[in-house]
Length: 275
Image (cartoon, rainbow, N blue to C red):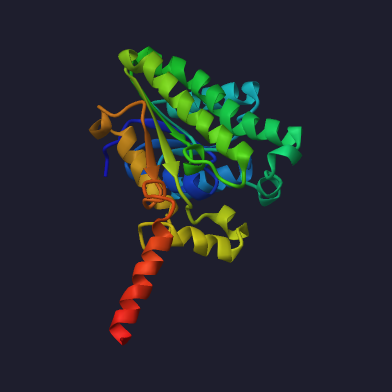
C-alpha cells in the first residue's frame, strides 16, 4: 500500500496498544511516522522497528498535557520528517491504578479527575492547536481522535474517563466545523473493548460479560482501529468529517436487554431440541 506516500503522521500514545498498531499501519500505507508517547523509550523502540522495516519514523517523548512539550514534539516532527499532514490523537491515562480509582462520583478524588481531563481532553486540544498551523499552511490535513464507547453511553464505572471521551467527541465536531472550509477534516473513532495490554488488568468475568453484549463473536483488536485510521487519513475518506465512528462490534447499537433476550431464545431452542 502507498496511499499515504509522502504524508507525515504523528501518533500520540504510539508506544503500545492502539497507537502502536496505528503507527505500524500508517507506515505500511507509506506515511512517515512520528511515534509520540510519554514513554520515550517505548516510542523510540516502535519507531526503530518501523525503520528496520523500511519506513521513515522517529520516536518522540512527550507529555501531551504540557503545552511546551507538545509544541516541541510537533516542531521536532516537522523538522525531522518535513511536514505534518495527519494527527492521530490517541494517548490517554490507562494505568490500572488510575482506572480502578475512577469510580463512584461522590468519592472521586479531584486530582484524579483533573489528571484524566488534562491528558484525555486538554492533551487532544494542545496537539491539535499546534498541528493546525502546519496543516493550514497547505490547506490540507486530517485529525483523527480516539474517543470511546464510554463517551457515548453512561456506565457504572470510570465517570472521569467517560466524560473526557464525551468531550473528545464534542471537540471533534468543533474542529471539523471551524476548519473544514480550509481543507482540514476531523473525525472521532469510538472503540469498544479492544484487546490491549490495558485490558489485561480487567477481571476475566467482566471481559466475558462485555463479550456477551457484543454482536460480533470476538472482541476488538488494535488493528481494527488502526485500519480505520488509515482509511480516514486517506483521500478515500475525503467526504467524511465531524462524525464519531464506533468500532465496537455493535456494542452501542442494540437494546440493553439484547443479551438476555438472546439467552432466553437459546434456552427455548435447546428445550425444543430435547423435548
